[in-house]
Image (tube, rainbow, N blue to C red):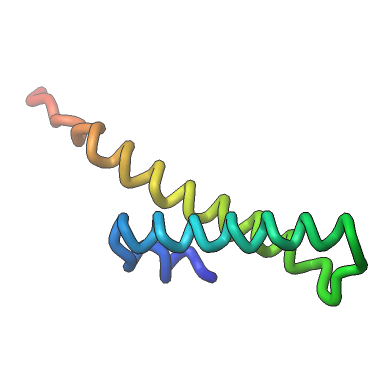
Length: 74
């Protein structure tokens, strides 16, 4: 998943996607402890996708709070 795709999503969609990713990550971690994973790199990709989701959510939170700098007349 690309960051540009996430930026186009609504906050609710991102939160839903984040929950799905975390659920899949949890299931893969459990499976890894019991057996060998067919694609162990999937865990790394999931971790990075979770981080992307959180980054986009945090950037939107900051953008809502931060006011643009006002220009001073010289």
